[in-house]
Image 1 (cartoon, rainbow, N blue to C red):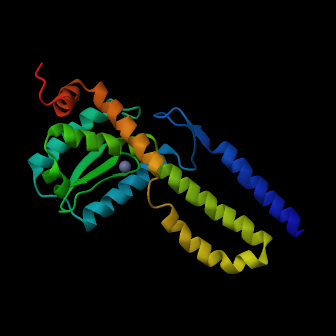
Image 2: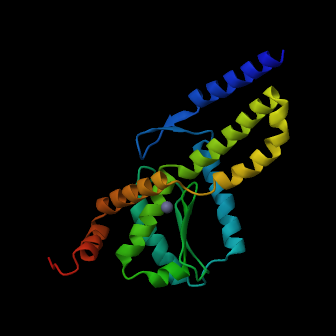
Image 3: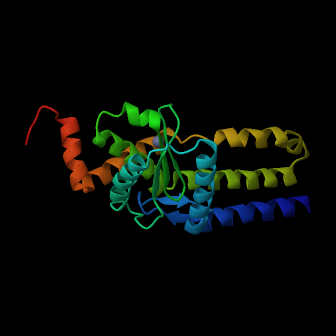
Length: 215
Ligand SMILES: [Zn+2]
């Protein structure tokens, strides 16, 4: 009986993996996802509210509008132009930028101060947008959910495992927090793609890469 339960649970997980693989619009690769676009957007919006509440936005309307405009222009060149893209500067002196699922991008006032040109800002925004279009967070969260399911299956199967399950579950959160190096280079690649599609930004990029050349 125990074996039957284990097998059917395992079959369920296998079926779920098969059904949950979708084609990613940005990378063209099959991707594991348990989270639909509407859910992705809803989660991002919720996290974005938390970020704004906890860190707070930098109080400079003109600057916020400027970052929002550069970001929105760039977003129109992505594979997911219809996401509710938002770009905000948070009131944090650290040098940081991050993307929430659904297209909510945040940069710190610290990183703004570190930029030497508009092109540098655009390339950071492009990189963060790459994380969104490639659905890196969604994939991570889906894997975490699957791992939880996998733990469930293992717990059904093994008494020993049940004892360690608490520990294993604790480790999961840490495991899925950071993007992998592959995700980072994919985001670089995608960000560059979006910049290349934007004529204004292309001009900025040229000036960044070939500062001595004037044409
Ligand atoms: Zn990144």
